[in-house]
Image (cartoon, rainbow, N blue to C red):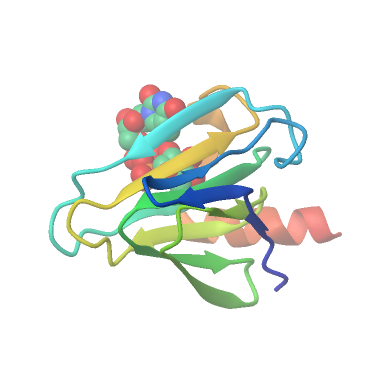
Length: 135
Ligand code: T46
């Protein structure tokens, strides 16, 4: 499975560091929604779903976490621990987020507004969806 990561421009000086990203410049889709996950308790695991039609870029802007990506035939674990780096997750990828460090904040840029009907929350349904879309 190909993993796509973006490195955002970063300005560092003696006072601190600033990274930035611009929609349609550094992100390959118009950003229609932003959300963030924080206060993740202990060794909680989140996600456990795929999307039918959604592109997202995940940025761990504080601390670290791991992202399991599964395309139905291959799995990869991607560590995120750099606030100047974004991970692209396209549709048809089962994802799980785990191993959050205390205080970690995961920022997500999404290509569509929230739509529960876009979620595939059952793994068997996900495998069926992947097969149907390959055919
Ligand atoms: C994803 C991973 C990386 C909303 O009402 N609006 C929103 O924009 C979102 C993202 C969620 N919600 C509601 C839906 C649930 O009642 O917030 C609740 C928690 O959502 P969920 O259990 O889906 O959260 P995660 O952390 O498992 O997954 C989230 C995103 O939902 C998902 O699209 O790819 O982060």
